[in-house]
Structures are given as structure tokens and as C-alpha cells.
Image (cartoon, rainbow, N blue to C red; front, top):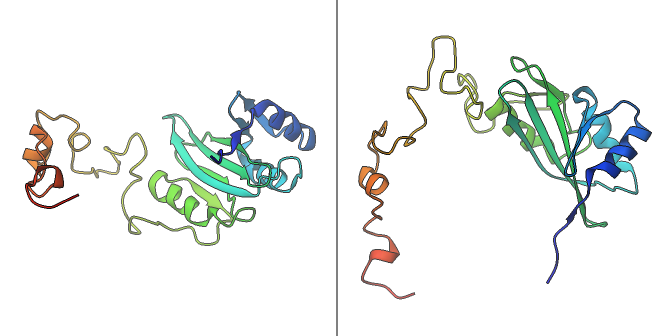
Length: 197
């Protein structure tokens, strides 16, 4: 059976990055290396081009809201060397988060950065087409931010909490029987008498 890519320990990656690009590493754990946010594109380019790391593919780009700051997480992969590297960039400005775009290094960042911008509000400088991907232009707020339920400027989502967070007092009674009692749809294959599997 084929095995997936092995996750590299971050310290050797951090040491190599720090040697090649002094001052770029800001933190390191066993699993990931954090780089200076304003130089993340340098780190990605170097890992992409360095034969020892061959991080030729951006397999995932995502973000995390830590209340006081954001993290953007890059999962880089070498298909030839069958390994994966995790790089993080910490964005301290929670009001106006901006990072250099990974698009010049990884064309696959095109839609992934648009998704992070759309749902988290992080802007990527140098992105060729940074606009909302899932929501419409002018949508008030960024749904994956921790403070989304109170989106500011006198606007709210219309909910006191996330939908169905409190099962005893749901905000909306959509499919109330299914959600509250756990009943399945009458057409669910598990509960219909007819049909063969």
C-alpha cells in the first residue's frame, strides 16, 4: 500500500531557512516553522527552489483567528522527495491583516488566498485578483472570524449565537424534528422499507 508524505521535523527546516535568509525564522516547534510575516514569500520561494527541500506544491493554505492575531498556515509538499513542510506566518494587525501573496511562487494559491480573504478578511498583497470567492462584494464581515456574530458598525448576523448551538432553544426551527429529536428524513435509505442495496 502506498504511504502518504512524511511530515518533516521543523527544526532542520528552520535551521536551513535561517542560514539562507538570516532573521526570517520567528518561532519553531516540532511540527512547524514560523517566519516573519512580511517575508513569507521569501521563505516560500526558497523552500520551493532549494533542491534539498523541493517544496514544489502548495497542498493547502488556511488561516486561524487567535483573537489577538491571525496565523496563515502553508502546507508545502515535495512529490519527488515524498515529504511535507508546514510554514506559518503570524499577522499581528487584527484590524487590517496583510501578507505578501504566495501566488508568485504557487499558482495554486490563487483561489486559496481568495477563500481566506473572503472568510477571514486577510489581504494578500500582490495577489492578481483578490476578491470574494464565496460571498458577494459588500458582504458585511468575515464569517470565520471569532468575532463574526457581532460584525460591527451597527450590523449583526441576526443571530444571538451560532445556529443550533443551543439545541433546547434553537434560533430557527428548520427541520426541527430532525435536529432536535434526531429523527431521519422519511426518505432516508436506512428507514425506507423498499429498495435493494
